[in-house]
Length: 482
Ligand code: ADP
Image (tube, rainbow, N blue to C red; front, side, top):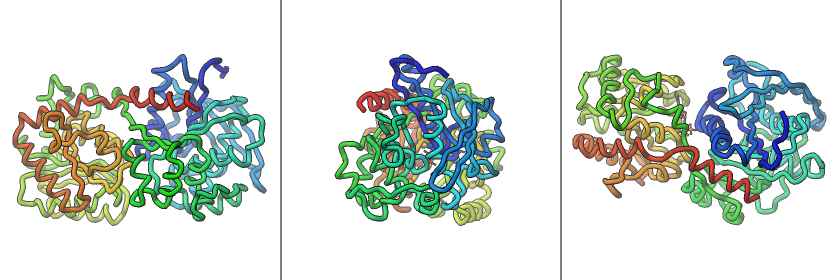
């Protein structure tokens, strides 16, 4: 691949990128943001993505070509890598394989030591891939702890290496609590040195995400709200002191969604396509789902939905506690999610007890996700914290109005009914408890009965501007400013 003179050259490094590998919102972002930058600013940017050649990507087997092999010394380890190239929406995507990636492993093991080896080695390999390709970049854009160590390595091991001279670094923080703790053995094995930044707390000096944060030129939280929250003890995960002191390098940019991939007007996963002009078609999806789930088939019964990782962060316990408290009210509930075995069990049990009105799909399934977005009336997102959140945006785009906590990206993307009914796209509440959820959901259920107001909120939600272009422009400004 030849260099394109005059363009900013950016390597976008991520653990996952849709559609090749997607576990959560990071995959959506890594699939869509580089593509949006390239499509909207083709004369200004040469952006390419790099990710591990995970087993799931191999299983999908997207068109790809092997472009070479290289090896390098990391401490006492000689690491051999294979490099492949593929493409997502015209963005070149480099796929790296090495002995810590090349086995039947999930994107994330959930075992910190295994994940540590996978991502610490990937962080070095992605830099060595640049050398192998002889591609001199202007910006390295890393994401979360998995690739944060590449930024640290540039500032330490590779500091005096002329090939990497002058590279500026951006680190997007999609989820601050996931800091890579447990990777210490892997880092020792591969010869990483601790950060010497005196502003970092001691525990953070040899923890991947803080090490990247300390070395990065810019830290981008995935919503303006989250960029403010991480400066506080409640959300800062012990990094608030550092981030306050270096607030000049912190900013927030709200994620967007791919409005072509997520379009109810032509989404093939749903039986009855619709848009704001054909809103009356929408309810047919709900009626079909009610029938399929053996619920009462009745369009006046509000259908509550959730599509999520089953975790504490997502406020799932509050939902499971709130629904029995609202049992006297008329609603049905469909859940799609997987994650914590304990929450999976609780959800299954609730569905068994109320099989006439509660159904649970305990799995990861993109088609069911789309069906729920398109069929539900109310989308529950009572997150304890939410760096950005994409599910609420997909829900709104599909006319499914969120009931959500007023935190992070939720508060940035949802217009609250109680604040201004005219511009409302959902319901926000501040008290992050079961009682808070019960109250907010009750208001949503009341409002659903006034279908005129409801449909006007649906129109607001479906036409809200969540295009990536708006955010991509802000990223381009950051790249240019460095
Ligand atoms: P997070 O990244 O914290 O998990 P986001 O709301 O940013 O949360 O993104 C979640 C993404 O994963 C959305 O695209 C959502 O549709 C998808 N998702 C979550 N759980 C499931 C599931 N069980 N099946 C299908 N898609 C899911």
